[in-house]
Length: 184
Image (cartoon, rainbow, N blue to C red):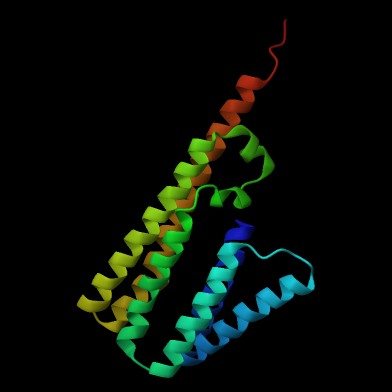
């Protein structure tokens, strides 16, 4: 969960600032600074920066900058779809999920299960991107705001919880199978 939250850091900063002050442009600027600060922090600490984090920073800078420059509400509302599609495309890379799993999970889950969940996440990102476009075009900005803040994040949390429960059950089952049988 820690790595997942690290990847969502600038998004979480945006949502927090947006709901605290209600200004999408200030929230966007703060999110851009947060994303750049996060990468700088990692670099100063000697921590490697994963492809997903570089992509997140690029998306925050490019689309956040476009948001600030254009001041177009439709662009702001469609922008999450572009981001979801880009993240979904990165998630199509086989094995991306490995960095998010603890060693016990990596050693007790099949490669196909890990990759399958990675592809399931990609499908979720594409579905959220499509849903966002439909909601942005069809509904009011207020409804869109609730969807992107609660619906999209809720879907990701539900996916994470489902994946966690199923992967954990599989790891436990595999550990029990591998445990030596005691002769009583």
